[in-house]
Amino acid sequence: MTLLRSFILALSIASFVGCKTNDFSHDSFGSVFLEAPESTSSAMRLQVQLAVSGLKLYVLPKALVQAEEILATDVVEAGDPDLRQRFLLVQVDRDSAAKIMEYSAKAIGKHFIFVVNEDTVGIMPIEQQVVDGNLLFHVEQKGMSNDEAAVALSKKLNATIVKLRKLKDKEGK
Image (cartoon, rainbow, N blue to C red; front, side):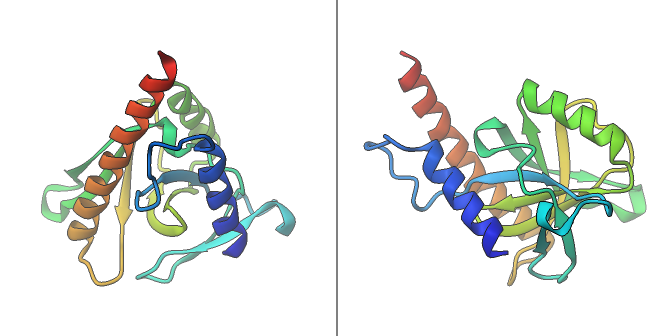
């Protein structure tokens, strides 16, 4: 996990080099990773673990979706009427949606993994090709119900998304 933490930290630093007026030290940055195929060599994959369930998976080391490619998050209800659950909806930009559409077609039976800062917080089974750029993650955090975790993460992530957009707009002028 230390390699994943180092990678995310380096990514965050690289993304914000030169940002002297914005303090991102307390913000939450989300990234989406793809579960690694079994044929992937151990040098080309990282092990991640969900905090509450303890589920361990191997992911490809490069994020499929990075923080600046996430447009918004929300909490939504989904599932069979008798088994409805609340999920964290992560909406991504057009380029990331195209990547997700491509990779999800090839990775049916695998998972998308959601990492916030250096913590693995969510999982989404790939049951069919994702064509709309909307990802529904079952999330978990220690000391919180799944519903509480989804609400808290959405709030934190959306605050960071707003800061990133303001920074991007400022740099674009």
